[in-house]
Length: 354
Image (cartoon, rainbow, N blue to C red):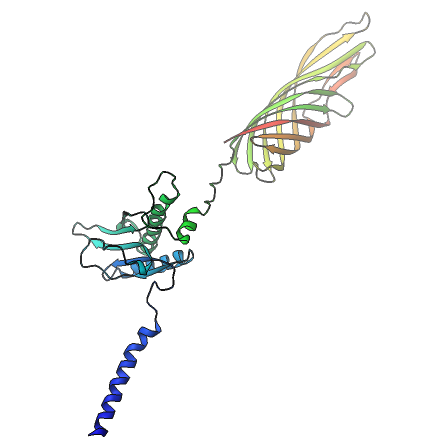
């Protein structure tokens, strides 16, 4: 009799050990000491992969903030269950329900019961309008946004006090600085500079130039330019002569760096029609006459800038070429002229507008 009882007792003990082993190997969820978000998945096949994706997403996102995710049982009714006991350290309960309605609608209903702020928020996602492979991610992102939106109340100075003290992990999550939205690049530029031009011994002129430009691409601007200068008088046998100019033209500007950068360099090239007013004076009985001639100029400039807010202080060095020679003469001898090639320098400022 005693020999028969020993195998039976040993078998019963073995079954008890095997049954208890899994429970001992896996600690209950929420016992790590960290805050817990409970997840309830009210989903039936074939949509369970949406809940599986949501669980993975929440574990990754909240785990990075030192918050655990625990799967909670589906309640018998659709009403959200009461808050979990304090020992569970639960701070919120997220319920995901996926419905195929008789009307043909295919929706996901996300409900968040926030135990910290003692409020409930809900969002409905129309899954029928989202490609099948994008539905799990859409639900996961919407859930994360709901949690953040609910906890954001903690940062409002006039918000009611929280129902329970927010754990440090939640405080850090809502007080993390948000990256500032990058400012829109400037689109329009207005410039005004003082200029000096030297046609290599033929004429020297001082004046100014203005432009209005628009950046049609991040590294390309089109400009409408206006210029005017007074030529320095040059002596002749019977007096002196000078050539004053007034012009308008088009140009392109190509920044080598972001055109809104604090410091930068750009290349400019343009062409303009130039009205040249020839003015002469006499020192004796000789006669003199004024005249108006037209020519064209081609310009190439390297321009540097230093920006302070919307204003750029700019310096340009460049070359000019007369497309047609014009000159003031004295008895057939050239006194002053715009011809050949020359050098140009300018300095001033430009204002940018967004």
